[in-house]
Image (tube, rainbow, N blue to C red):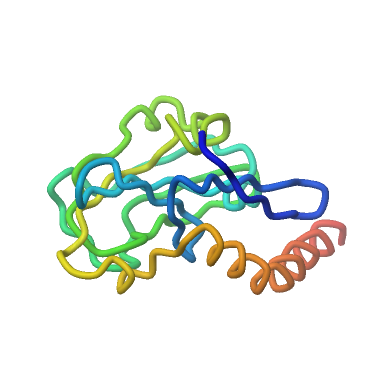
Length: 160
């Protein structure tokens, strides 16, 4: 892996490789072929989710996705949630290996733990909200206070 940036999440350090871009919904984006982007969860998202043990896709290759459209579900130690399209476009492939072994996301989030590949509509990729690693770290700093309050609120609720 190439050079990386880091973001401190308390005692945990989220590693963010600089060979890819990021989306505000905490996914990474790597152009694997011209105009084909592979997406997966960033270290920040995986840390917040913790121990992913179930994943299901509601879409198939060839399906069209609108921005923020739900494309599947994920369950982990900390959350059960829908997964939402990081960008609009057409699905080229989904990582079916995750159906049998969703823990790949935990152990190899920037490799075998990828989620899906999408071909975005033609045009300027910056219009899609794709961030540079530096812009993503700025976004994380801006959002960290809210995330900490949410985490602390959940911890206080768990203690009651």
